[in-house]
Length: 333
Image 1 (cartoon, one colour):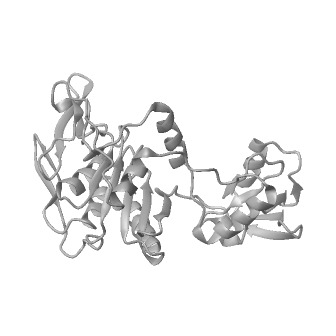
Image 2: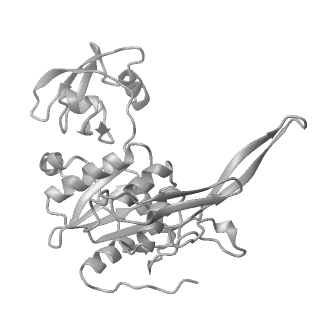
Image 3: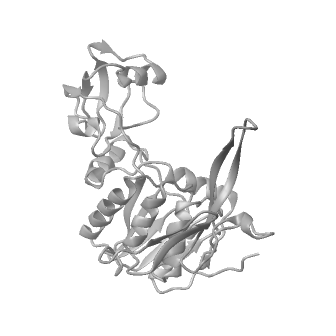
């Protein structure tokens, strides 16, 4: 669950879908009063969170007070949670039906999370999509390949060529369920590895426009070789990854190169803007079904509780493309 800050006792801002807090029925604005019969009043944040961790327990009985003042007991069943890799989804242009999804990293769950987010946005009227992989350092290659297959009907997604063997990951017949969605991919200098695979595949197959700044350039596959007779080990470059048009993602592959994938529309931002956008992307979006409650909570408190998204020239450029405008590109130095 996400807590409001600052808070004296631990006040819930909103629970995340699928978590023990959500399943137990915790609501917007609930304030913790006791955990397993022990009052939490006066506890600092660290001590409060330690009580909630419930080490070795299979359940916690917590007393909470709702915004209307009514207290109730709630049974929480703690479990290990996996951090969602899709943290943000929104209908960012209702008039044109433009949906937005931010992928923070790639794991074996990412394709499933991505599909669920797309379908929720479609249900709200999305007919176009912005995929944000800024500040995404990569992760599981297969996850990026699977998502690319949602958009690419045929051909290569990514290939690796090296000393021992060459491997080609290709599109899968019938898997391109989102091929008809006009799509923009947002990238920056911290988009690396699997992020570059996704952006490069969609760019080369002309199924998405890539907007933002040049990517990091991490396309090297390294393996560790051991030499027992010398008692040593060495990390050896064994392969490079290539986009469908045979672009090498690795920034060190060519002398003087310091980037991986170049955007179709170059939108540079200053350091302050980048920090603000990155901070926003690291947060969690509240469930859409709780937004009315959260807005009422904000009105009651008289202060902004969810924060205001920062100015984002790269996202604005993506929206401009869907509006038929030409936001760039600017020249790359």
